[in-house]
Length: 130
View 1 (tube, helix red, strand yellow):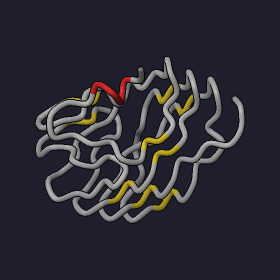
View 2 (tube, helix red, strand yellow):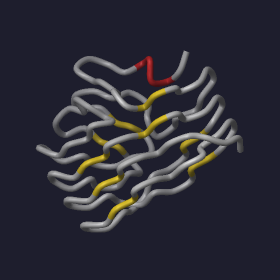
View 3 (cartoon, helix red, strand yellow):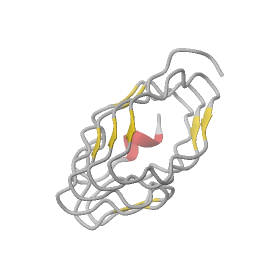
View 4 (cartoon, one colour):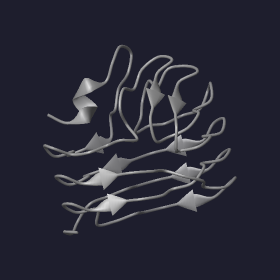
């Protein structure tokens, strides 16, 4: 059972697909209204996160520091078994990260810094191992 399964009231993680057993998602621990995700930072009211749907108003994601209004995170897909996403950091205003591919078994994504206003992270997709 993954950490994602522990999501609370009013939360939905729709595009964090294929999170394997024993996965470690220290940045995504308890998505819900007024909740804290320990390694991401603040998702503002009216922001859009298609892969992290229904993150409540005033919720905190403590290392994706500051997802600006109307920004979009469209997909975090296929995080492999026993993988670790240890920190998300700062993607600047109007920047785009179109793909972070090959997040395989036992892999780590150590830092994506601050997603700013109108920025887009379109995909985190997994192909390979390590």
